[in-house]
Length: 423
View 1 (cartoon, rainbow, N blue to C red):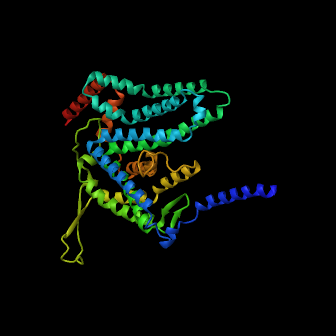
View 2 (view 1 turned 135 degrees about the horizontal axis):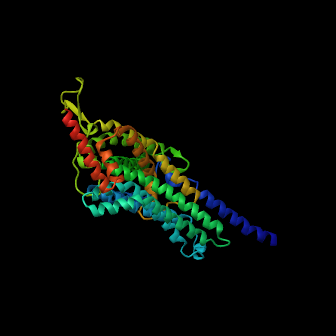
View 3 (view 1 turned 90 degrees about the vertical axis):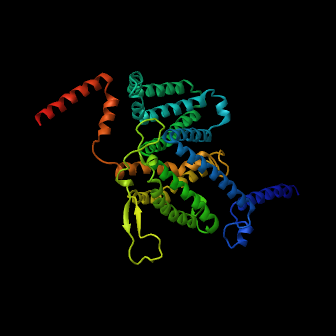
């Protein structure tokens, strides 16, 4: 009897464990009733869809407003996104018990973060800052000095953090502290690599930031829609909710959207002109050959009732197809990587700052991959080769003092005068 009493609870516990495990894998009855299709009568799923849609509308509206405000505000948005991403990733490996014994250790993480931010943005925005203060001699000299010692300042800030870390090492906490140190540097590489390319795209012209970012949003939305209504075939084990139907439907939609959206965005100079300073005014410039329409006469087999006899295509639209192809086929692997990462740490989302979507990092996984590709593609296939007047002026303003610039101007004037006399 005693043996039977001992085994009964054990068998009951075993059955409970098995039941829990089985409940995660068995398809719900409502799903079977619908022929294995998506849950048509699942109220929770539709509620989640409406929450996600509501959040998406607010995000797109806010994003459009910031883009309309210009380069500087978009850069500020990128900085805010970085801070939220870092916060979510810092919290991922923190342990409350260990942190209580390490006062100030969290502050050290943020010290490394803002040091990296100062280094990255100092390198990216130094030239626009110089161009902004060129007319004021005092500010120009001050900014030139700060730029000259910028790298040394960032280095000593990092060394200060390194020494701070060594001095705070505690016995029996070494493994946790070194793990946090390595994790912090991994976050800096992931976050600032992506952001540096993003900011560089912004100052090359908002077009080169807005189009890639919009394509990722379009791909994400239509992958969700096609998967929600037509999804049957699982795409990848790392992300069980992804389906082939959603992937293919989103890919076709994204490539078509890339071609059409490039034609719309490419007609606004304030989107296509590069920004050379940190001012916030509207831009006007020569759009360049990529943004000048080319007209094609439609073939004769087109029906007469068709309203257009010719169409205009911007050359940049052909490049947009490459961006659309990457956004639909390659960039989603950033999301798959994030899914595998979350599975490794047994979490559903990186955070809960966006209702229905998770955290900021959950929305930025594909954007990080896309931003890097957009920058490399622009530099490799779009950027004009050779030395331009603007490049020479940038070198002069950045590397020469005010007196040296005046000397250069006098010598250049003398050389030009001598050449005119010879002619």
